[in-house]
Image 1 (cartoon, rainbow, N blue to C red):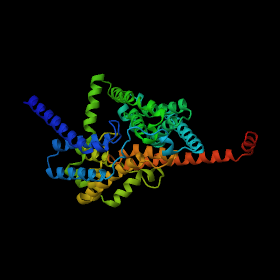
Image 2 (image 1 turned 45 degrees about the vertical axis):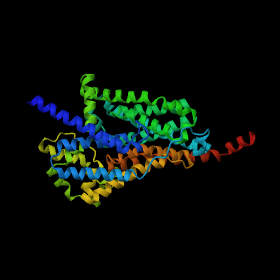
Image 3 (image 1 turned 90 degrees about the vertical axis):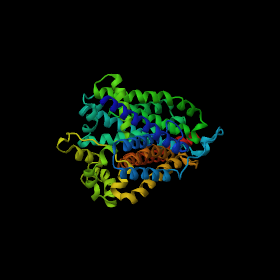
Amino acid sequence: MPSLLSRLEFANLFWSAALFTAIYVLAYRRYIFSIFDPFNIPLVTAIFASVLMVNVVDDRRWWFQFFSFQIAFFLGFSRNKLPRRSPAPAKGAGRTCLALFPQDLDVLEGATALLFLLALGANLYLGATAGFPIFDSRAGTAKVDTFVGGLGAVKRINDGIGVFVPCAALVLYACGRHKRWWLSVALVEVGITGLSGSKSAVLLFVFILASLTHHEAFRAWGATARLKQWTKPVMVAAVTWAVAVLYIEGGAGIGEAATRLLVRILFYGDMVLHYYHPDVIAHFAQYGPLTYLTDMLNPILGMLRLVPYREPLGYTMVGLLAGQNTPGTVVGPNTCFYVAGHIYFGGAGGFFYSMFIGYSVSFARKLFFSRPKIGVIAFVSLLATSIHIAALPLDAQYFVTLMFDTFAPACVAITISYLAIVAAASSPDHSLRQEAHP
């Protein structure tokens, strides 16, 4: 009987996964530009959250709330379609879509170099003081509890600068600026992120490659063809790296590590397992729209020491469910939009919140892939935002933190680079060189 029951449970999981995969893929296929689209991550999360909802949660009222929020997200998301892709971009299309002024490229190069050196120095300091989490015998928890005290800044550097630098480096490569150097910078930055124990370090590189090579401004350039041919091999490397990290964490065989990766994919929607319990829902009933605002800004204000840090909602849920058996290092699931909407805005308000989140995600993607003529720095900023926006439906607080950790240091570095270039251009030696070589 136990074996038969387990077979029935497996069959239910399999057929519900197949059904929801078909539903979500058919609904979103017109809005996804590639199998390597960053939005595939929240899409997979929605699929498996739906599978867990119908197989784990018994109260059908929560089914209605969950799926109504999923529909609301789609209604908002579908308002913005990606621009149609022309079959053969005209020669020089990249020049018409981007304003490639030499000074802008110089400023971007200087800022990217500063940010790369900051990330490299911070991670070398981490390795020298606490060690790299990927090499820790308890890598699964080391990638969380290593980043305490002042070392928490290193994780934030990796999450923010770790995206902006490869975005800028690959754009500079495509623009023909010191190609070997900037390609090396992008690869080293991905390696640095991997040392922190991230299973998605290489996957991030795939998303940046896919987004760049799909953009109209770069498809007409020869460098884009070379970037595109790396996408599939790098995707294989991303899966291999994820299995390797799980192998290091668990100390088990490769086969078991691969199985654990499949289980991790299934449990992308594990918020369903933590929230839909009477005690957990009752605990969060006191939260409201004002709490939402303070929670969104808490990681930023906490870093500035203006308010004390508050643990993420997912961590609180794990503690509530574990009770007296709460482990020393508590980690929890991301607070996806369908849970955040219900916690902060209730049933009716959560519906419109889900619609707003869906609209915001598709709007940011459409803005990046549209074809107005913009500067290269603005283009890199939109590229980084289009990568980060995939985190918004998964955890709005984490998305806000990512944006701050990316653009606060980037703006400082760009300002420093710009002032340095202006100062160099206005120096007497520079003026004399211009006069000597008219």
